[in-house]
Image (tube, rainbow, N blue to C red; front, side, top):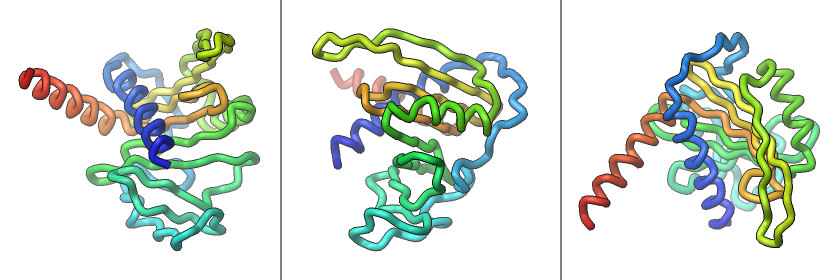
Length: 191
């Protein structure tokens, strides 16, 4: 469990600075969301969803597990045609980012869902990734960026079996990136 949480935190932290650092002119994104799967960016998870009963594996209604620092695992989300896990990073007055993971075999379905809901991606890229055993795979990345929200879909996120979607509040991601940089500078001064 802790390794999964660490992977989620690492992936979100690795993606967030890349988008927080970009101050590029944004295209007009008419389908920019203010929520994801019924959860709004401006609301606290524990204020809008009940705590899942202990031992809950599958829930018929949306609920959240007890948070691990500011990370919530949400259960009972909407049916989207394939299995997924939804995590929410909360901080300040609401949600910093949503992190949806699924098996990489579902990537094309995930990409189709996001394209249908949010329009064509504003950027796409491909790169070759290699496993420790030396096998090569082509990783695909799709991204959207608006005035307040950025979305990144990766075919391989962390490993070749996991696809992920990160839906981030741009201002919250920028603030978090600045906090990390400030802490790193402070820690570097201690050397």
